[in-house]
Amino acid sequence: MTLFSYTAKKISGEETHGTKDAKDKFDLAKMLRCDGYSLIAYAEIEAAKSASSGMSFNLFSRVSVVDKMIFARNVAVMIDAGVSLAKSLDILASQTKSVKFCSVLNDVAAEIRKGRPLSDSMADHHDVFSSLFISMVKAGEEGGNLSETFRLLGHQMEKEHALFRRVRGALVYPSIIIVAMMVIGVLMLIYVVPTLVSTFKELSIELPPTTKAIIAVSNFIVSHTFIFLALVAAIIGAITWFLRTEIGQRWLSSALLHLPIFKTLVQEINAARTARTLGSLIGSGVDVLRALEITEDVLQNYYYRAVLREARERVQKGKPIAEVFKENANLYPLLVGEMMSVGEETGKLSEMLGRLADFYEEEVSAATQDMSTIVEPILMVIIGVVVGFFAISMIQPLYSSLSNL
Image (tube, rainbow, N blue to C red; front, side):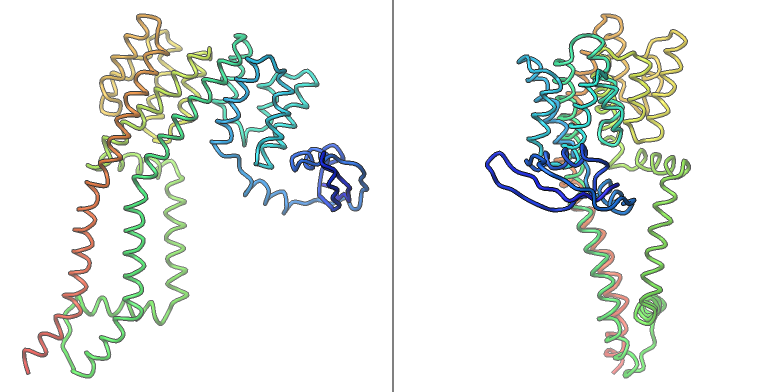
């Protein structure tokens, strides 16, 4: 990276001066254009590696799903209106509020002007455009229906985003309750328990095992706070590392499929994501094998990914896709395999997958709305048990002592 001093001006006449790190003068001009300025003059100050700033930029300047969804819809409209692809990207780059997305779109537009296909240009930015996005765009280019592909992409991302928000919304309430309960528990161990311990000592009360255990935990936290915090951090780190391993992913995937409350929800979420992604890819003209491979990457549950992998192997041998889904009725609802079978027989697989996705997305929406009703009493019972255990353990010795007076 090189440090440049520059002078830039807006169309309104407003002028600005400053310094920026950039690869070259063209990169500097693109960065300023994202802020609405045109480069007038520049001077090279210092050439140096800006690894830390680059790391910060990549880490904190992500492009949201909403930005890409709006981008896909707008590109479809502009192509239909006869605007050239490079010009469309220039317009959308100037309108987006994301500095990173603006820079990416400017780079893609520049590559298109050099004669590169849109999909190849997007492939240079895998951190922004997923394999699903790039493959659908490539299929649209080859099929000559790029505007329809972008419209389909916008719809796909809208449905995926809505599904994600529903699931996240359903998990927010129980997460807040659990975290609050843990924080309150630690605060009581730090501030309440030591006060009761001094009372126990003054009265020379014989303590039951549960009370001694709580006091021991309290003493450890108060006397070794930094060790306690380090231990908590180590446990969180170990759990995070374990869940990233193949064994950990299998365990988590299996656990979610066996939890009474979450089992049906997990099945419906994965059925909806599989149907939506696979249907969109096949509908845009992507090869079935490639579509199955991309859909496998989209899914996060280990066992569902294994089903997609097996389906790809079966298709390579000339067998129908629906066969694998019917055999895995414990993961995918039976309706999925039956509808896919009908779609293959009638030549309307993409349409059938779209209907399946709509159906299961509605089911997920209903299930997440009902989840708070189901989870709330369970959480209340858990909180009651914890509070009751603490109260009995710490107050019972006092009552026993008073009754003996």
